[in-house]
Image: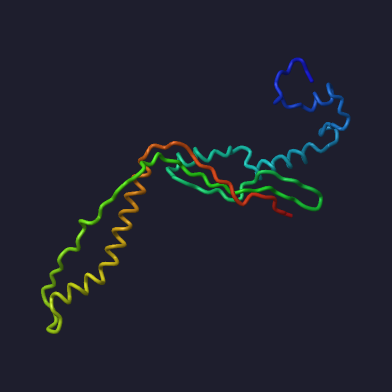
Length: 179
C-alpha cells in the first residue's frame, strides 16, 4: 500500500484512506457535525470494554497474593444495530501452577486424646463412663479440627512451592442479547 510503511500491523488513518486508497465513503466526522456523537460512542465502548484497564490476570493474582480467581462476564465484542445490542462475553478462571512433589506424606497416627480428669462425678456414673462420653462428644470436633489443620498445612505447603506458570480456563463464552 505504501513504500514508507513496512508493517502489516500499521493502522490506516482516515486521511490515508482518503488520500492513498481513494475510499469515497470515508467521511470527516467534523464536517458532518457528528464528532461529539462519535466521541460519546467511543466513551461508551471504553467503559464497556475497560479499554484503559488492561486485563492482566497474572498480575492481579500476584498483587493480591491469590492462588486462583474467576472473572465473570468479561465483555469481548459488541454488535449494535438500531433494534438491539449483542455482546460476546466469557468467564475466565486463572490459577497459579505450582511444582508439586510426586508424593507428600502426613502422619497423624501418633495423635492421642488427652486424659480427662473430672473431680466430682454423679454417684451413678463412673470415671470410665464419663471419659467415654466426653471422648465420644469431643471426638468429632477434634477430628474436624485436625482435618482443618491438615488442610491449612497442605495449602501453606503448596503456596510455598515454586510457581511454574498459570492456567487459564475460559467458560460460559458466547453472544448474549443485551437490548
